[in-house]
Image 1 (cartoon, rainbow, N blue to C red):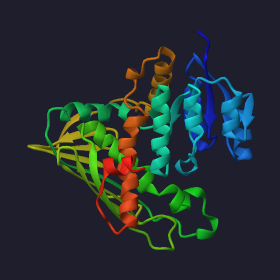
Image 2 (tube, rainbow, N blue to C red):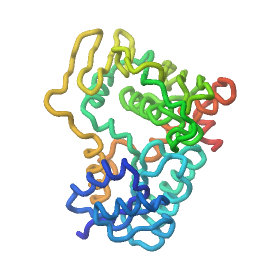
Image 3 (cartoon, helix red, strand yellow):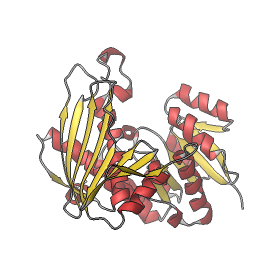
Length: 334
């Protein structure tokens, strides 16, 4: 068969360092076009990787090219209707996370994907990492009681004059948005539970370009609770697991990407070089498209909405003084 014809929408660092090199490892795939509003970034990418056609306007690229796959790698705030247009033309969609800054945009993209019947996935690559798959196996017969995700880092910048888009809280949302969707997704993957209600609080002194801390309180499908915190205070992080999952009769903790402990005892360790989940996901997605078999994938765009919505709902909750929002109502109202 002919090669999969792929277009890149967004030619920033993540495209250049991760997705494009990954795609180039797939013999049945070729990158035929790229688009970015940043002319310098676009020119640099097409020259480095020998991409023959480039477009400042992604809509023009979709109209002009015969494509099988669109990789959408632009920041969440920049997502509008490009993926919708691509899906309507029968183009399969890879969407980097977070999928959108506004829920109504993500819901509209999902509707277009579902109506067109194209194959889709979201960049929740850690589902492909063995440590999370093993945790899922261990927890498969457990009754979840409480889940905790925590992320710590140093103080963010207070230099508001030289702020990039990442430092614009209303665009980027900080770690609670970028990493929060990961936290929700991997807990969902490990436990088989979804988030049904979400509430959040942010501490964001105005001199800093990102919030110094945030706290999410959530409830899961079976009634279990879930807490997520991000704190930016000290570069000396506490020696604690990022994920801790409590179940009736025990506790599972994940230490980095290397070790799982159950009730304080190591039950699984990764030996040898770490695998590359970004590469595994990209190769699996393209194989799913090539064979027409979406069952190869560990999630699709619709499933990804259930990881995005609790974070966006939490963002709205914080703006409204910490009200608790029903996730299905939040999605349906978008």
